[in-house]
Amino acid sequence: MSQQQEFSLWQELLEVAFERKHVKKWREMTVDILVVDSGFKPGLLWDYGKPNVEGMEQLLKKAKQNCLLKNMLTVVTIEMDMLILNLDSLKGDHSVSCLDDMKVVNVSSELQQPEAMDDKTRLQTTYQEYKDITTDGKNMTCLQQNMFNPSSLFGLLLGFPVIYWYSMKENASTNCLACQPLTVYKVVGCCHDNMRDHLKLPSHKVYSFSVPECVLSTYSQHIKHWFQKLVEAGRWVMWFDDVKLEVDTVTLPSVCL
Image 1 (cartoon, rainbow, N blue to C red):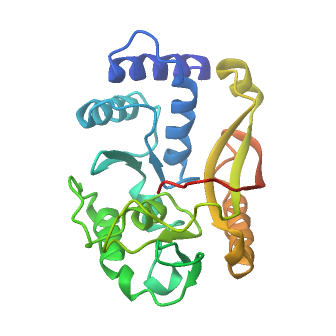
Image 2: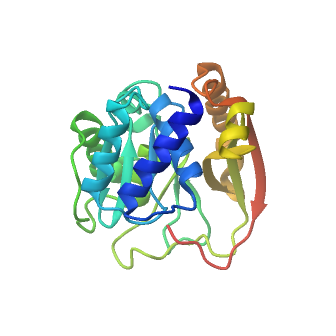
């Protein structure tokens, strides 16, 4: 099967999953799934709409049967959010083996500004949920408040080098990131010519995460090392000619986690 035929089949499978004749962003969806399959990124938070979990599982199963995927990817739901995970990648290149390995920023609403979080004891339950999911793909269908922190759990599953944590004692939706300068990191792949031709995508954003400027000095070297490991692992070469780490600064009136 040619690559053009493979991409056409991806389009068909996505249209079935969404029960729609035309899916506008099928190209971006396809590349997002492929980079998770390759292990370049361990997980994907699906924000293209809400096909049901069974529909997504069927899509991934058919993609594997048609040799469009190398791995059997896992679908996990946390509250209303759906993630597609490469469990082998989460247990391998992207594994977080202990609490001490985690780089965490405390953005609780009671703080004047974000702080580097050295004491990880309050993340024990979140870390255990992460280990349970990576071990057996356990589905989380409801969030038990004060049990685990969703922002931290998502950050771990998506392979971010630095994650956010906030106190959930009062209002889980509030944090102290409003009007704080944030350094935004994006890992962008420059697509191969064949992808440019067939998908009309010159580039594709693989990772996007932020770190408050006030704690950046604590984590900047860690982020550079993390990116260097991503590049050296070479799990991007099938789809991209090159990968770049783009850096920008934003200040927002409110930030939703």
